[in-house]
Structure formats: structure tokens, C-alpha cells
Length: 130
Image (cartoon, rainbow, N blue to C red; front, side, top):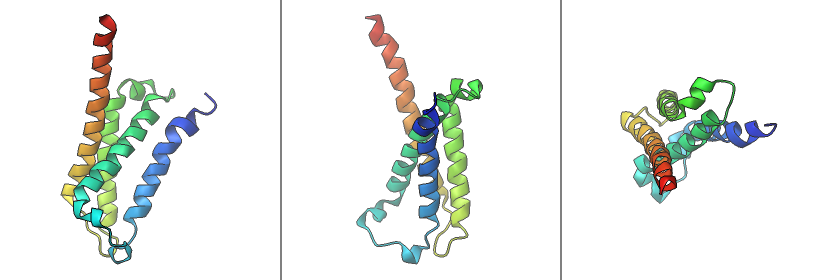
């Protein structure tokens, strides 16, 4: 248990910081990169990964059992709230803007992760019954 924070919670915190720092860069300082044509796909992937780290952080903590018991639900809620605050933050960054479709892509990334975890959890007991 001594290393559980480093293993489970710290990655979520660090990735959230990476997102915040990245979204703090004014648009004229962002290097041109072909992948940015797929902005919504980038949002989807970045927040899918944040959802992965957040799910693990919530699921494998013991301080709040209710959160751990409903980790999938709380993951989607936290990611949607974080995505909304990030979009609000970008409204104040030069050359950036708040975009509802970015928030939608962020939240869909979290929803896909949650659906995959849920599906994997449902498939496992069926396989063990055979």
C-alpha cells in the first residue's frame, strides 16, 4: 500500500497537469503538426488516456469506498468536469477558444474507456463459468 499513490493516483495527476500545460500554450506558439487536422481525435485520445489513469486512481484508492465502488461513473463525471474546466481555461489563452465539440470529444474518450472496462468486466465472469 505504501506505493499505491505513486502507482495509481500520481499518473492521473501528472497527465491532468500535462493537459493543462499544453492547453495553456497560445495558439501562435504551437508548432505546426499534421495531426492537428484531427483535433477532435487528439482530444478523444488524450482524454481516453486521462480516463484510464483516473479510473485506476479512483478504483484503487481505499479512502472513499463509495467512489471505488462506482469508479466507472465517477470517472466519466470527473473527466467531463475536467474537460469543461479545460475548455473554460482555454477561453482565456491567446489564440485559443472554448469549443463544445472539444468537450464532447473529451467526454466520448472517457465514455469509450468506461465502456471497454465495463465490457471486459462482464465478459470475464462468463468466461470463468465455462
